[in-house]
Amino acid sequence: MWSNSATSQTIVVTAGTYIVTVSDANGCIATSSVVVTENQLSTISGIVQYSGGTLAPYKASVKLYSTNQPDSISGSTLINNVLTGSDSKFYFNNVAIGEYIIKAETIDNTYPTIISTYYDTTLLSQYAIKLNAECGVNQDIVVNMKELQTSNSGTSSITGKITVASNNKSIMGEPIPGAEITLEQEPDDEPIANTESNGNGDYTFNNLANAEYSIIVDIPGFPQLETHTIVVNGDTSNINYVVDTDTSSSTFGIYIDSATSIIKYSFKNFSVNVYPNPFKNQLNFDFNLEQNSDVNIEIIDISGKKVETLMNKKLSKGNYNNSYQLDNIVDGIYLIKMKVGDTVLLKKVLKN
Image 1 (cartoon, rainbow, N blue to C red):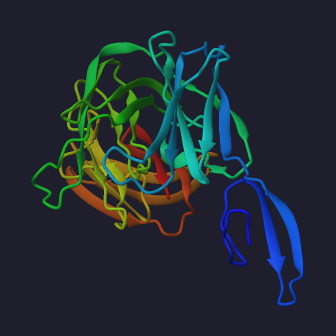
Image 2 (cartoon, rainbow, N blue to C red):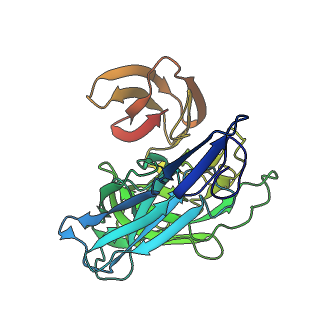
């Protein structure tokens, strides 16, 4: 018999000291005691840093997300949200066994150039470092924050909308508020502006110089599968994204709303739309020639080596739609070099 009155050979107990008494058919009795200890749950702690050092006390909000599949358009389950304390550190105590990611953000305008960042130094949850919480194992980390870079200002703007993917392509889906959108300037992928979608799913970037930009959309737990790369020359609208929330779907995640988004690079003698980006195996070129022209299209790797020539011929004025199967090139970052007459377009694409 156990000291808690249980009489089975095996019992389930909490931490503490237990005495067991065993008697046999001859009336012999033996007594023994056992101390049961319980491993403490995990603690995840750390500091938040930027180029100027550690953020001041109470100036960073740090979020702990489960890596389980999202169960709503709000994204992954938020387990806890804490402020850094008087020692400039954050603490998540009693973290249950599981896999997590961490996102840090500032709480006011003390650090106007710092933008929300996942551990470690990424803007997208799909690239965040995953932390495994185990009983009795504590982790102390450093979250290095991304910062906005200075850029030239101008009079152009980019606007768009984030919505839930709809089965009916002619009807726009439910708007998604609170998605975090970052504008990066090409070719260096430097973040220059950051905003969130409003209650109608809309976002806007104003006062932009005419240049080439790409857009990052983050909702925790939803991978961004495609992105817009835009050459801005005046106001640019309908830079829209849709979110497939079906976790069993092959298109689960964030991708370009092809039904409403048409991005073209326009020059005096031609215009072209290259899509999708990223691409898997097929890359499409829709272009218009304003006059008869020599057209050369090449794929170049990041070392500058030509990988493949897609086109090299003289074409008549008019519209063209060409698709190329590129199963033979390995996944990675490439430049599309399209030369029409004396005009050259260089566009970065990702094969994955």
